[in-house]
Length: 512
Image 1 (tube, rainbow, N blue to C red):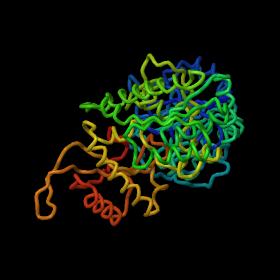
Image 2: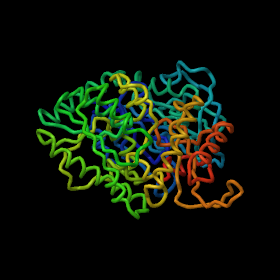
Image 3: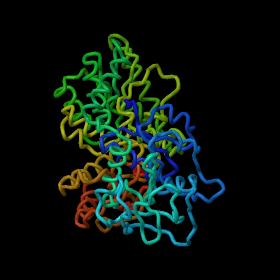
Image 4: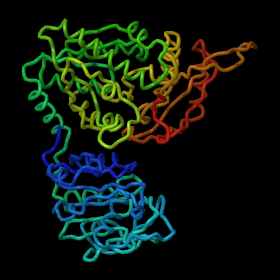
């Protein structure tokens, strides 16, 4: 699922590269993230409608500063540099980027100095979000300075005829008051991008690509009950109808009553051919004494595939295609391109090399918010579409340590209370994820005037747009108290509840 003329976001190590790509898509223009190491010739071979150079943590004055082939500036492709990307443009084309000894961080007042495509509909002053130490003090010759801040004389500049622009701030973050308007102006008025990336177009392209890939062959879908696999199943069912069989593997590591909900939704509401495999004992046996989280993910990923292969042999037509709900952030976090491997998603880095299936991944280029919108367009029920993300390996990666039947039962009961109370407080859709974690350690407590030595439960709740970054949710104290009281009173084996207030980065959302 791609566009003929994508907008390429060149990643210079910015924490906001994914956010830039999302903001472009929110303007209904398709975007892709590419590493800065990708040769310019290969970038241009993709026939991009525009190229955006992201920010990054480096200084353009450092010896090993990431750079880009200056041939890009003569390609005729519209270019927008953000933060570090703007400094590269200024440096490479003869402007001046100086170490002034004064950086700008956070909210900064930006004043429009000249009317241009990016600034003509903006107020004379606005608040922008800055995060830089080096400063663009002079734009390249022939470029117009469109705006400045107290410490950056050339905070926005451009060369109209060459369609090259740079802004020192971050228009992609919500703190920049008119940032999205500036991005739209660049995309529509400078690059001439049509706003054609819509839910309907995504579905049409996905359906066409699935039909072209699959033909008349049988297909199975690994259905987990989460929004990603549910939307992938609905898309493929729209494309190939009765050629699809969904295989729901009950790993024994699901949330309470999840298996029943999945079966009801897809068998009763969608009338999809559904095979329900109860494999809890097999997964627990495979995970016996495994503590390392990466090993857990790979063991679970391989066993999933083996069970799908077994199920496929019993399906008429012997399916050779496997549908998965892989998303764009899964690819990024699992080490795609120049990205570091943060953790292997079981449906990306955890797959065995010798599996018998060709993968069908209709959501591979989508962010979570796009997946939800597509799910609504396809008519999936709200309790599926708006379900909080749940890891493919299930509760195995929410038990820090060895996975045992006792620990799974404790965590299921505690997690059910967390979800119930978050929903009762009316916060379920405001929070990206809220769940319980069980560290396999014990702590001393006192219950009923007696000493206890039981497990702690850690509550994790975060806000996010796409899971690439996240902040801990500021839950009301009375809600935290209610969750803690219920977990300790209602879940045997627990005597302590803690709340994780770590953002991402430096932590991840899941503990493993």
